[in-house]
Length: 270
Image (cartoon, rainbow, N blue to C red):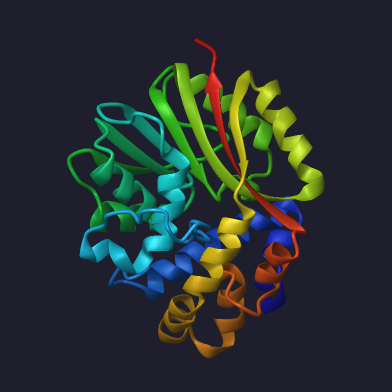
């Protein structure tokens, strides 16, 4: 079982989602103090002279994970808009965007009921709420949202084409899907075709793999420390794989370029 967790990203689709759900539920059980708010690989600017995000002190420890969300939505006006995040996980990205970008409403959706209960208990606010649901069968009316955020979640879906069809359905005309995720090189053309087949126009595509690798290198010590504090010894190797710490197979896949990481901005036609 441990080996399954350690190689989940390379497993068949039908195994990835249940393993990811088990991992989410384990984190909820182990981290009741809400130290871990993010589960993404992070993003670091390659140019050290680039101005750093201005963050309040409580957000500073997870700067690199926040950077990824910021980079994903940067350049799209979300203020006063109705936003959905599909695959919100621990809710850290939802909390960041709802506080810093001032949308009218932000709904985080995740498959894990325990994660959603946890997020509503710890993070819910006047413009932020969380619901349990399936990415391939979104529980919302047609034309409900101005933008949909999807960060490091789609790779676990059994049928990405169904998810993108649902994205098209619930987006308003002119609405955006703000998408970041990893793919093996051979799967990138498949993903591009899935966007187009769903009726979504690709406005931007960016290879952010070098930024992901740099963030993992800079953030590895913090991740290792959290793993040592939160995980029993028999699961620490699995946690390192999920986290992409230095020396993990996940980090090697990124470093060697076998696993790519791209950001897309796609739009539903007006």
